[in-house]
Image 1 (cartoon, one colour):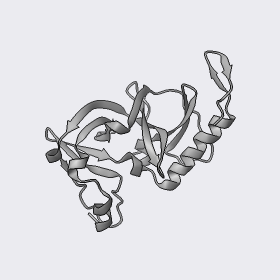
Image 2 (cartoon, helix red, strand yellow):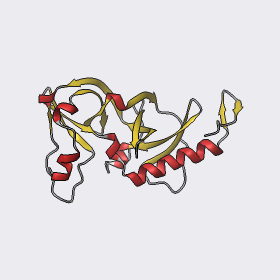
Image 3 (cartoon, one colour):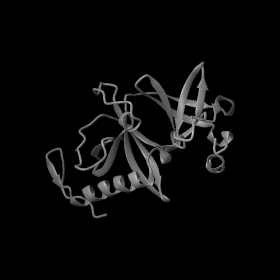
Length: 188
């Protein structure tokens, strides 16, 4: 692990806690439960032109427009058909000190695990060309490995700014239709 990564990383003791685990392809991942706002079934996602491939678009969640990212695509795992288990985890991401809601599409949600200090290791070194700062650690639970993600680091600052702009623009411009009633968007 680089010296800069060591300085900015939480200690293993700080990483211990509850994690929502989920599946992407055959791999298991975990997110700090405190970052998770809710889990919703896959719903209609409105595509936004000129966004990166891993951005599915935006959703209307109770009148709030939230950008949605496909984690499988972001991690270069390829695109697959959605299933009944495919869902959106709504997370709270820190963007330059500001809290931003973002949806992340995953193949399936598994369970909430309480991961202890002695069950977490630092991410192994993969060489200088592999960025692992989005990996909070590796959870070792019952002879299985779970990659614990730092959702604040999964996207770059540039990505997050673009996502926030998508949400803001759509919140201001969209007319939301729910239950066949036309609602004017709230002023931001």
